[in-house]
Length: 154
Image (tube, rainbow, N blue to C red; front, side):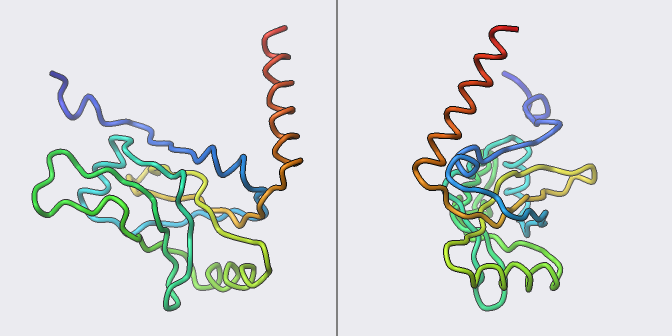
């Protein structure tokens, strides 16, 4: 049986690949996340899913919703809820800028990348995004296939 320290990832880097396929990113920000102890332990084990998550304002505060952080396996009754809303920590200037951009029709904020920085703090990269049309998605698939073919031929 492997020890817990052996399973902890040194460089946690979790990407939301679905978001880059569904959306065109206009602007990116890096935000801190307000977490509980068992949540950061699960993140360091790499047990996070960003696929269906999105960001929203609620009573003047900015939250990420539907980010699935699996419950910590060695947690007790103090363990966290897997899909709870988590507060994002940004400067007031950045929050105002994001809120002004969201007033435009068709824009949303999606998390794109979750990582742990050098100090051991979990950071979430978020992007103001515009949804892609069907022909844009086809173009993305075509570009990806061309890159794959070029890599094979080298």
